[in-house]
Length: 70
Image 1 (spheres, one colour):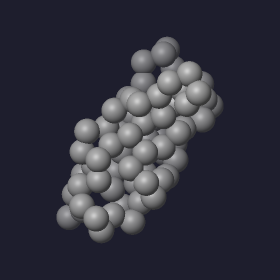
Image 2 (cartoon, one colour):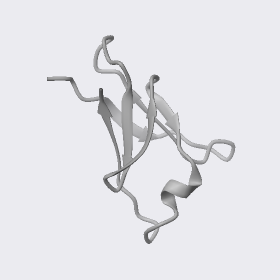
Image 3 (cartoon, helix red, strand yellow):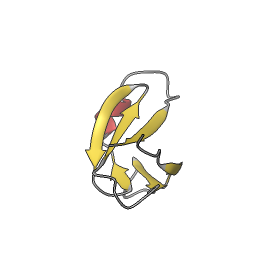
């Protein structure tokens, strides 16, 4: 099994309003897939991602962001 990322957190600011970061569980992870409310929102080879505003366009303002190692 592929180990899960550790400690997903919102790390944004006014310049990067949709920035999320996490820790790599090991050094042999190819990339990470990021999901918003269970829908694929982007992929990153780093342990962070700056999503676009359009992935947060639907819903009531409460979103579930998750990340998976690949």
